[in-house]
Image 1 (spheres, helix red, strand yellow):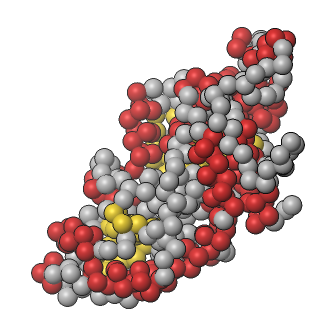
Image 2: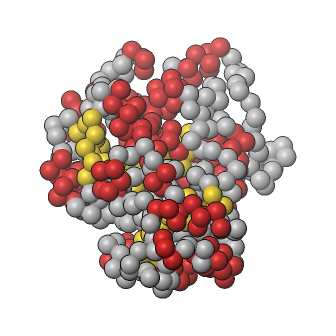
Image 3: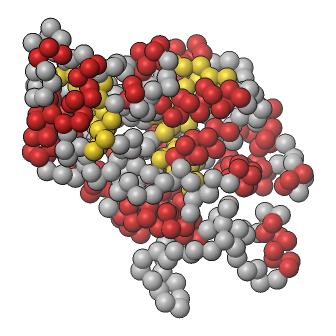
Amino acid sequence: MNHHATQQVHAGYEPEAPYWPVAVPIHQTAAYRFPDHATAASMFRLETPGFTYSRTGNPTVAVFENRLAALEGGIGAIGTATGQAAVALSLLTLLHGGKHLVVSSQLYGGTVDLLTDTFADFGIEVTFADPADPQAWGAAIRPDTRAFFLESITNPLATVPDLPALADIAHASGVPVVVDSTLATPVLYRPLEHGADVVVHSATKFIGGHGAVLGGAIVDGGTFDYGAAPERWPQLTRPKARYGGQALIDRHGRGAYLALARSKFLHDLGPSLAPASAAQFIQGLETLAVRIARQEETARTVAEHLARHPTVGLVHHPAIPGHPSAALAERDFPHGTGSVFSFDLAAGPEAIGPFIDALELFQLVANIGDVRSLVSHPATMTHCRLTPNQRRAAGITETTIRLSIGLECPEDLIADLDRALATVPASALTGEAR
């Protein structure tokens, strides 16, 4: 079962007696009955695998975790309550005390909030680097750097990094690479095959696909050797009373990272994925490749149309000539770069509101990855808390508009955009568009 389309439907689950359900059952339970006291004690000591409490594991959630790990080529996964929780836990597992991260200057705004505000409260320092400049990442590494963090396709400008080059720089300094691959999904890109060590997803988006439930996931490739420099990773390599005086790396080997993320951070902080939500993500995975292919094709058609429109200044999509990631996208993304991209109006900021309000099919929301087409204005919505300098570094202007293309007919979406663009008054247009 090596083909992704087959794994999406079958990986991680086999029907069992007495009813042999074909669809994955929802195990809507908080706790689990133990057969005897000795088994319970052994499971709580983390000596015997199994489910003790749904905060740290659930049979339905486990199917989702196993299926996504198979699709990404990882050794295992952890489901979380949100994509933001997945990002937080994936990095906290690597940060023993106040340490340092090198992260992309082009990130989703909520992630920037997490890294620059909440993480700062924990004494964690962050250096931003241009994802198109690998040497800048190397120059930013410090002795206390514990991870690189970036997106495989950036939100909202659809740029792609040279992940193999960044991974080589990180690994040469003993630093693991964590990649948020929400926009790509394993259908378009598998970061573990390009040098990443850990992949995170906001399953809320394309994996769920219908904007109905929140959730996230962490997938570990099991590739980073924490034992090569044990003094840098005491949380994994030193004996801990919590684990019966053992070191996690001795007990779990390549699975030590996931064991720490689940047994400490998921357990202690509690951002657990609900079983009913996991069931919807499992169903979402079953149709993921079909949806992604349709949305990618439509997005390319819409982007090419916008690039020819006189009221549009610039389209941020790798398929459009002149996009800074065009060559990398052609090399690493043979099936496209997804259905989220942006464009800049060739008008002043005062035209943004009237344009968005004139749209009928595109719905004004903060989300992406829905079967419905969506629109947002990053500067006043998802990236509103970035400083002006941070927005400039991310390539976001006051007239940047983000689109997430759904499953509607492309001709209808183009007609909706054209109708809204026609409402932009001539007085608002820049000289280039007049």
